Length: 152
Image 1 (cartoon, one colour):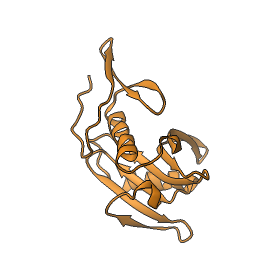
Image 2: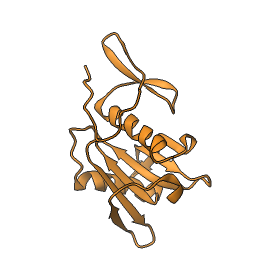
Image 3: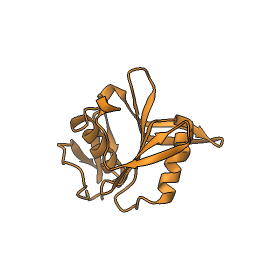
C-alpha cells in the first residue's frame, strides 16, 4: 500500500480513493482515477503547482506524451505548450526516493532532443532542478526557480 511522502511542494486537496486494497488519485487533467504510485504522487503535486502557483493554463499541459527515441517508444511525464503549440517545458518526475542525478538529467535531455522544449525541469518532489535550454547552441543554464507561465 502507498504511503504518501511529504513533498517540497504545497499540499493540495486531492481526491484519493481506495478499492480492493489499491489506492487511487483523481487526475483532474485526464479526468480519471490513477493508481497512486510514488511517482504519480509527485506528478500530481507538480501539476497542481504549475496551475495554482505558476499560473500555467490547464489546457496547455500534456501528461505522458509519447515520443520515439532511437526507435523505442518512450513517454515524457509532462509537456507544457504555449498557445501557438510550441513546446515550452519538459518535466521529468521521479519518485521521492529517486535522487536527481546526472543520469536523470541526461534522460530528460535525450527526450528533449526530440521535443526541443525551452526548459527542462526535473523533480522528485523533494528536489527540483530547472534548466533553461539554448537550443541553437545545444547548451543550458541552471535556474534557481521555475518561471511563471507568462514569463516563458
